[in-house]
Every structure is written in C-alpha cells, then in structure tokens.
Length: 149
Length: 77
Image (cartoon, rainbow over all chains, first blue to last red):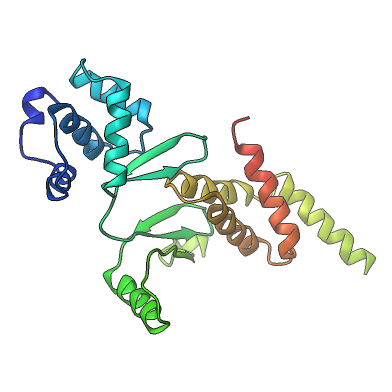
C-alpha cells in the first residue's frame, strides 16, 4: 500500500469510521487500511509495524489510541488467540459459525442468514434480544474417495 | 471384567501414544478454533467432541482430561 493507495477508494472500515462520525486523520486512515487488508489477526505491535511501513511518522502510541477508538466504536473486535496478547480483526456485520470435520480436525467457517434468522427467532420467542451466538457443527465428509469409505 | 478394563487401558495407551491417529485431529481442531479467535473453553469442548467421535468408549470425564493434556502439551511454554 503506498500513500497514493491510502487515498484511493475508502475501505469498508474507513466507511464505518465515517458513518460513526470518527475523526479520521491521515495516520488513522493508514491504520484502518492496514486492518482492512489483514487476512490474519494482528496484534497492536504488528499493526504498528505494518502501518509504519507506509508512514514512518506513525508512533506505537498513535496505533494504540486508534485501536482503542476503533474498538470502542465496534469497528474492530479484540480476539484471544491464546498467546496472552490482544489481537484484532475487522468486526463483521455477519455472524460466522464453524463446522469441524471430526475425521481430520479441520475447521471451516461459514455464514448463514437462515441460521442467524432462526437463532434470532428462538431468542425472541424466549423473550430475549440476541447479543451473541456460538455455533459449532461436527461432521464427516460425504464425498470421500470410495477406498476410504 | 478385569479383562475388559485391561483392553480399555491398552486402547487408551495407544491413543495417548498417538498410535491410533486421533491425537493430531483433536489437536488440529483445537488449534484451528483458537487461531480463529474462539475462546479456549469452546475450542476445548470441540476438541473433546472430535476425541469422543474416535473413542466413544472413553467416558467423558476421562476424555476431557486426555484432551486437556494433549492441547496443553502442544502450547508453547
């Protein structure tokens, strides 16, 4: 990402910041773009490392403040990957669930508006507003090669 | 009865030694869920389901102990 790229079409995260009325400095824009482009779950120091590659003037304190602001606004989510440090991902508008292959242990992520609607309805019918779900499906592949059946 | 118990002990020993092949799958499920940001307790529960699918004969409390030990072994100290 070059500085010119940072001024291109705003990312989803930048649009969310604008919608929520957050003041976006050029440095916050770079940090937002780093987060949008991440396909992993970077911690603050990793965000700082990536952001400073695009703007050497960004300080670690600036990244901490921006992450706090994004988190407070619900634009990024803090996640625990088990190493004792806070990692972040762009907050998704959709719920994602997991399917675990019991024969291999592999985990697939999926989203389903139908499932989400059912869960919302169940909560509503029980007199609740749904604030979170955690759904895991377990399965065995149906299209295994014949010799494995 | 003692004989059956011995057989079960042998099966579990094979499992512990990864001879039956289920340990990497149990560890993988745990690792991938934690890697996706799922809470440790949720990942442990899922790993236990994988373990119990391979070993329905192992009572749940014992299976939970084995799984907890396996995933703890795999974590960096």
